[in-house]
Length: 441
Image (tube, rainbow, N blue to C red; front, top):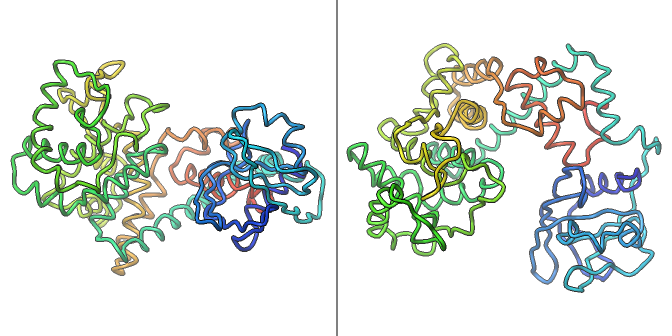
């Protein structure tokens, strides 16, 4: 990305206010400015834009110094740019380019702000990376610790705000489901948790025997998700799947009317580009097992229990909260109904994903509850556990950034420092916030 275009992206991400006047006279309101993933394709992905005709559009944003650069750069012939819904330029020197259907792409003229140093070498990721490498391991590690603390504080603040509208157990449940959704199915999983609230689910489970309770929980969650075979086209079932499914379908038939109009559809879930071991079907089965397993104590109390015993729990004790292993179970050997899991049996939730859930569910939940109740001991236990907790190995983007800034693997061996890298990615790298990046200071 050229220096001038990078400044435009920075201006877009930091511009005060959220209303803009387009070149065609329409008023645009920005709901979400999008993220800057880098690499080939549009500069900003996943922006959410509201137009004055009432339409709300999600798509990508491309930045150029001049309108004519759209054609000069060949974007009109590149399928990667078919998702662009806004063209931001420094100068409108030509008519707005047209999209795939022949309609003009909305265009915004946004003069870039003046920077004291126009040299491209002083702006952008390279400057951040140089600044990081010049710090030395001790200073860089201390910075990542501080940024990791900021990220956990951000999560805890969001949870604390959610407690004004949710019970502690529903918050724990929604946070768990969001974590199980990973990046591609987070939204669908949260919707599922809202469609089948944990209080409703546990009330229906009652005191049923474990096997019966698990069947009921799976039937309700799969049914409300729209992922039972009867709800999906082209579902091919093997003999084992028929045995697994028949009981779930019968149970769902008894309850389905309760979820008419509020459940999800199969099309709400993403399977493409997801590893079979992480398919949403396996993660729904995981959620069912965790809710059933903790129904007596309550999900929130079960997750916070290790932190309330007077001293920080070991990482292994926290990981065990989420480890779900049952080699004989259907979902230990299948990715989906009728689809065997490549490579043989695997845990429904292994150690890395369990660690991820500890960092993104248990610790922010504990801090939020501690802030609400004034339980200083709980907060201290959560911070102590965080600062000694090992990192999951499941964040490719964080590992890539660590390599770029010269952070040796041993320097980023904790969850805290890995969260520091994610703080940089989410708050600076993906928002073109290079000018204010702590690494470049």
